[in-house]
Image (tube, rainbow over all chains, first blue to last red):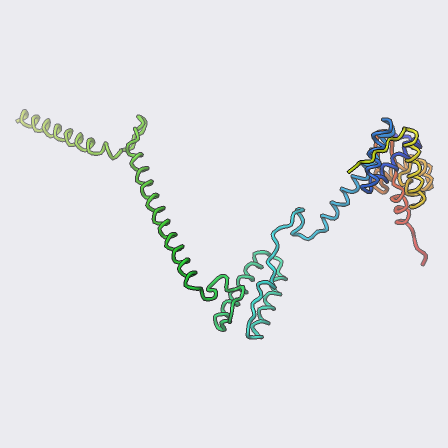
Length: 232
Length: 92
């Protein structure tokens, strides 16, 4: 293998180090840029090489930091965060039920498999729902968002009814449109000219075919009868 | 808002740069501008006289180096110190 010379020009070495050091802060980096502009090609090359070395190190360091991030940060973008449990905390009147739910949540957090975790969360929600049914809460809590909320005023009720009626009307209109579209499609298919290679029987050809068969059968019968008469 | 523009002659500019460098050295120590050393200095630090040994250390990744140009190789002084430190045998 070829061996390189071990001695490097002192000026080059100094400039390389200078570029490396000056690239480290934004202020000195500005000075470095001006130096690169002002100096000759050899010096600027050495300064740039030093700066490049620092940049590569910085990138490598960043990658290492990224690798140490938690799993949900691994792709560099923050994924959708889990809803804060405290926000959806349900105040249960029964202390034992609360404890039971907490234990269940703890177990759920400890599970590594996401599918298992989902199942556990679902069961925890069911448990909470059952508990709520048994001991209905007073006032509005976040869990009420799913089901029935606090009593609505007359105006709000009317607004809700109007909205539902308009939705129903829209649904009916949509169904009607779909049905007419389906009908027109069927008609188009029936009227479409048939290919000469298409041997499948069509609905239009069906009566003609029947009558043709009838005629052939009659002709054959007639022929048979004539033959019998001749033989006699 | 007025912008103050300072125009410097080439000589004055380099004088200013040298002043800045001297100040950096004074504040952070001389070694700050001596992190990247050439092969001779690396061999002196490692107390080796063979270029092949140096190359072996380089190829095995024992010491860090930078090769900005084909025939220019600079070694990271800190990595050499770390290499020496790594092979230290403590008293027992």
